[in-house]
Length: 157
Length: 413
Image (cartoon, rainbow over all chains, first blue to last red):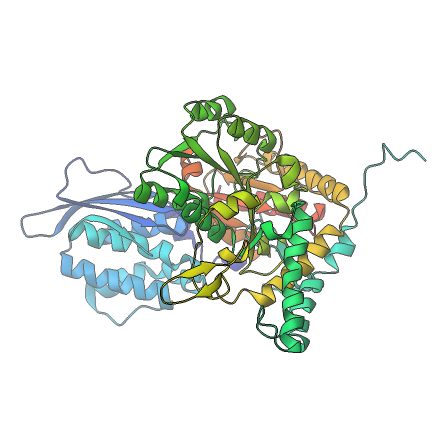
């Protein structure tokens, strides 16, 4: 098919399609010290995140398994790449930025690693124009924060 | 004249002309509305009846001390007569007006449930909408009633021998089951279900939310005890539904909600209930919605139903054939008897991504678990896309859907 759906390329940018098809860190960690499950009841997206921290509390490894749409899976994949090696405060700041990006279409002001990371998440900004899809982009981030904190189950509702 | 072999002709264009919304464009493209199983669009007759009532004959009802209230009461109560005719109910007093199917089922779980004792059982099926699962779970948890689930086969039909086995110990007091699945389109064998239940001493409630739109329903021929459905799927307004119940059973049941309109006398010592159906209708009813529903039922009954059923069958068969021919598409359900609902999945693409891309082409489909998570679990799915049809759906729309699904496949390949 040569037809391109040009009018949805704002939502389905090539990087989203790539991470949706071949998500990175899409595996279950053998060893982990935190985990959470996320669920988007409206659409049925489900995601599971395991984290392993080092002695200083930084995210040494992360695995996730998503059963959801391309946006949900790609968001989790980008998240796993960006967050590895960072401490919970940095991850929380990036999660906040990712949510703002998804909801408003633009990233908050930031510097350094946070700014660079938000730049890489820019393809997620397209969901802002699709209110029903914002939760697809934010589910992975809520779930990671729960895995780093209390664990258990989170829901976007 | 021999007309036996001539297929009945259904004039879809004439139907479409009566639905103003079908002239709308979505994102610059003609609206292709394939989500009627969620809620159907409204014909001019319904729109005019409701706006006309607001302009000319509106007041509160059942307090007819003035002219306007008398006119409004007549117009509102006419929907009870229309529903009686639609269902071929023996009397209008057996038509309880509720807010929607969900409220009707909750009414039954409360008021019929009040007649049940710990150890009694309710049977539902594995292809119920959440609205016909959750109220029974709540009854189970508060009254010690057992909830049994009749399984469905791989083709998406009721597993009848398993259903009969659930009835065998004689403890089942109620079978509450869909007359047509909102996910698979399966039309259940209502007459056999009811006969088996009655044989075992159980009453039967059919959830007719989908069936009443696609089949002519005769509650007397079925000998069904309760039949519940909602107005907005039958081309009528939201906020109104119908619960049919056999008079003797309704009379034996305590009220559901308390308040005005459902009493005969009130003192601080005690209140006495109004007769059925008003016993179950507390508070100011959905007046405008009743007037709209009456118009919808009249409009629906005036259709050529043999021709409409043939048209919907042709749409469904065409959709299954066209979609199944697309690489990676799986059409769910293979029931012998199915209505105009076609759920499908596409390999490598989540249903929500499919729905978002179809929306960009102006096509409205449902995507998700369709409020029937246990059924999706049964088929090992989180979600599916669902195209559903109404009297105004055309074969050209089905072809357009299939062409666009083919494009979506290419996009995610």
